Image 1 (cartoon, rainbow over the protein chains, first blue to last red):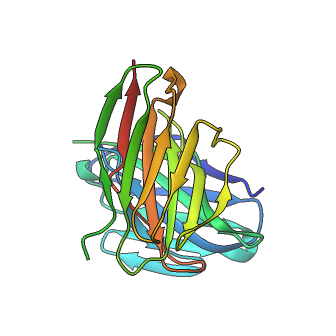
Image 2: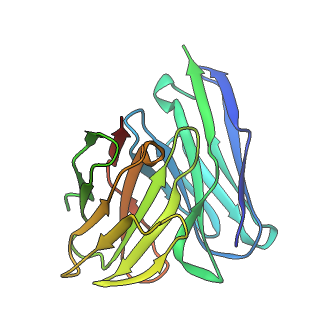
Length: 110
Length: 113
């Protein structure tokens, strides 16, 4: 089945810094989503981005489907950005479910 | 739109007991998914429904696990004869039919003692 790899696994930033999180996937995909898992465990939708670029405030995401990767940019990071970020994909040959990466744990220090 | 709702939020049970979790999807969504997440890992797929039909089950879903969605609305996930290894966060998600955006509930955290 499709493999999803995220990097880096852990990231520590000072408040105000920018960061880039990466998601690589091993096969063509029909869908890609970025989530932020809050401290209580809920997955919050950030982006639904099978291709192209989207922006939402200080966050933006780019998916280059032909090269099998997606990037999540966080600018001017705040302590509330801390948590785990997941990307998840529907593979083109496996449309029944989202396959998740292992996540990037972000800690933003004041 | 009240989002995906899961109940209970937390469950502590003794090894060997049966537990049942409920998920109410977003009302117009006909796909419903169950995932399990252990500490430090990404969510792992368990099963999904389209309307009342269970279309796929993971090998993770042993015969102690059963899921139902009898009327194509809410779903239940039952674990029989719980084991300590079943301790995890159980997440439910829903989406419209096809490859569309999925939305997750708050999860049910199970602790087996």
